[in-house]
Length: 265
Image (cartoon, rainbow, N blue to C red; front, side, top):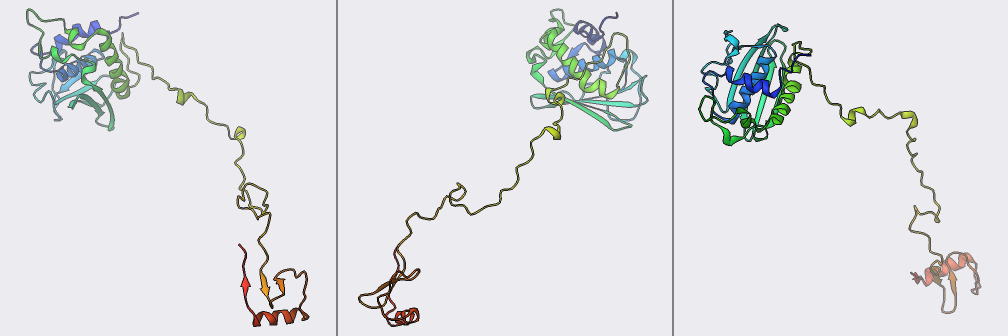
């Protein structure tokens, strides 16, 4: 089985050979150089470091002297690959405390993106760094540790390399499996097993049910009384006794003569 060409030790060994002056001026330059190293390892061919359409040749993918002329804010790389007819543009940008990697396949406008917290993957105190200095510290320290390099390279593969060229074939290279979240594994609900929605309740007049909190009083108020004379009180509804010698019509006529209406609350 071939060795992993994206192993941290292999990348740290390859990276200095791709720099024109063996120096990294900033944390963002270090991240851009590492991405270029990853793409070089999987056979992307550098054809430019700007937005022009000119195709240049860079032996062994060594970066030109002006590759970081717009750093640390912006870096631009243009690539081609033997397994694709497309041209790829990769941009690395500083955005506050984050570094953003944007890439696009020019001919089909397929764009991908990755952004990371810069200091999660590099040690800012390590840069600027001269790899050719006699007392230069090991380059791996600039990327914190081999484990952090592995984590960042996995993100590069998943978010940039694989979307640009799916199924890329290179000895020593294997694609990263896309993680499946638990939410995507959950089966869709079966409508047949779902409870039927509650039917709308039609209000019914039943004073004993809770839906009618205001019930009729158990002891109704006194009946409305009509005063016919000084001695006679007759309930307005349901006359129980009439001492007045007149008929109901007479009673109503008497109301007109003495219309004192009493309401009991």
